[in-house]
Length: 338
Image 1 (cartoon, rainbow, N blue to C red):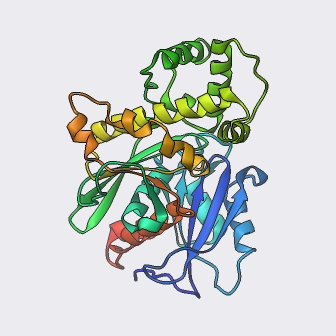
Image 2 (cartoon, rainbow, N blue to C red):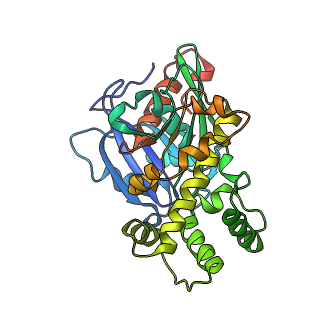
Image 3 (cartoon, rainbow, N blue to C red):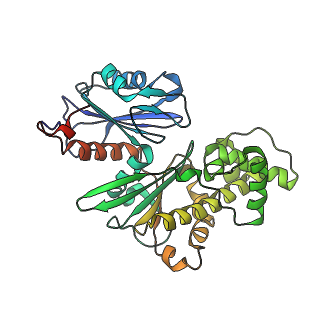
């Protein structure tokens, strides 16, 4: 029979990134994640160990036997390796180790896309354009440890997420400064993808490139320091790095909208931008998004929003689980728990 979540038998949902592993429990049909916790992925040898550590910290519920895991990387077959971390595991072996009846993986940005229809105005900050419409295709992008990109397509009474590796397209460089930055990065990396710059460590790369171009001395500095110094005005190179980051992100977001036909909206997730919200709002992000002549009219009607909700990919993973498990019947070979 089709499993449903309950307090006695909750569903486990997780969002596994290159840095953090976030977990939650679904205790009722259509419910939102409860007892959310974040663990440092590097402290655990694999997914099973991190799940057990999380489950040891929760109380008042039974042990899950169903799990939906959002992961940072392409999902194909039984073997999965995180794109920006060391975990490499078999889904089947992990399911057996945990004693689960069902364990499934979904790309993390596909999960984030599935959360979009459930995000109200408290969960987002408008960045310009029209109004989100989930009756039309939607795109989700997000700079974090890497750059995630996915789309969401409405089909009858379901939403179909489409995972992509759009973060690895060539970096958009529109200004003279950006062209110089791309040239410096090309000497080091060869191909300069959007993810090379539009991610956490990309802020540090921007800082060093701009310092070199301006003839200024640079020091070893973390992405968090670039954000802090740039927002406080204590370091003009850091401030410029944040502005370049937002501008390039606007161009990239506009490119994504055109490529995916995302007339329903473009939403931005990830862990970086909520911490520099005011910088993003004051930047030329939206102007760069709209600068797509002769398609300016097309993109200017598209909404852009910053996701500020806590762990939205967990909600998306729960939505995916419900969609995956609903068709399961005792007589359907396709629905067998594997």
